[in-house]
Image 1 (cartoon, rainbow, N blue to C red):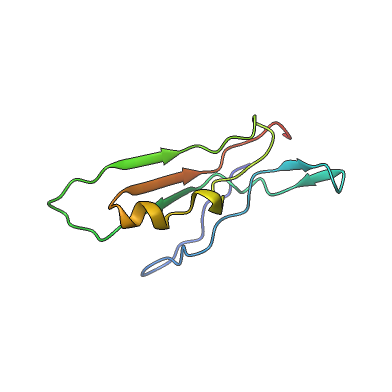
Image 2: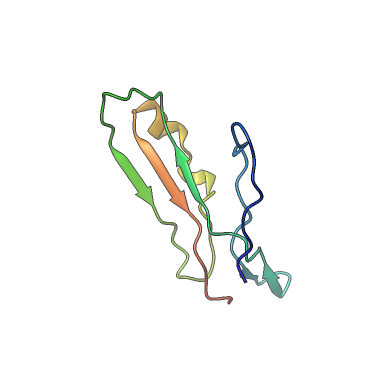
Length: 96
């Protein structure tokens, strides 16, 4: 059952990735991850309200078996240098 987020004041610290969604770990023979995993990661270069920016939405691969939106192989640095907003995400995988 969904649980409401705890309220906060001021700026919320979102500098760390959320847990990855549950996925099977073949080496350990069990599932790892969390059910509390449905988050978007939004990386924004310098904000200029009057200027539109291109947006890239990246949905990780993994054949609905493994992966997460925090894959540093496709890190945000390149996109920030080119003034592109990057959105990555986690989604439920076959483990559940």
